[in-house]
Length: 321
Image 1: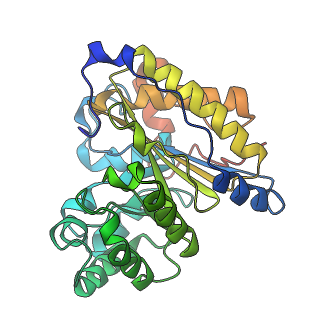
Image 2: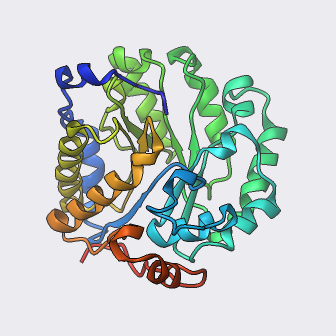
Image 3: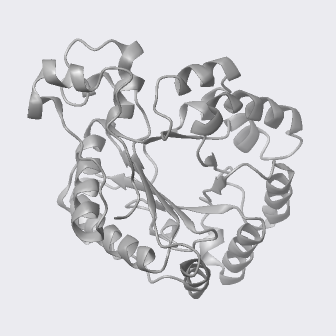
């Protein structure tokens, strides 16, 4: 992932402090606190087809066809960026769903033909095709991820809202906005996130080194969808995670319903290590009982293959204890 990339020597000069929660986030969670006392957690990566995870996440000799089923024994969600480049068929998503447990969630990204090429206009046919394709996930469908073209700024608010309102109400939609004008203009920011909240659409928070404006901390539903972009296990990756765990603990105390934490790295080979750290810190500081990630070298290939063979799941509950 190249978004927000900063050269390593410049990382120590960046202020990674998380901004305070906007008052609207506090008000939203205050309403939720009266309804919910448990927080459900989903921690995962952006890809499963990583050959360089063989010997770390996947046992030696693992075939690519088995990557997903083994991935789902370590993680309980995937940010599915593959659907951004090609609309999947229903049979394809059903096949993927057959390889994971019942609690696993896919977060498919709207295809670029909808969000980028046509910029959300005159896309009914494509949207119907996309929705039909992801329907194969059935109960394994998690939040659906929309990233409007980065060129779509405040002047496109009505277009964006019209698209959101055209979607089925049972779709759990989350949106990531990259145009800097949304964050530079106070009124534009307020109007955008008020629109999302009014339409029960979630707001994605993307924590990338070179785009601190996207760390807006404005929740529009009682679910947080966090995209964390690390820097190859640089020391700041860990201190940034520490700050996120502190904020998530605060949100838990306020009754947040769900947290999706998707790990990215500019070199994705490093994502599992930082996911492991995220889980360890959540369990230590937030009272969660998320199963730890067990790398191949921590056990032994034969034992890992037996524990992670299809049909067995490590996940029972990610709810707060």
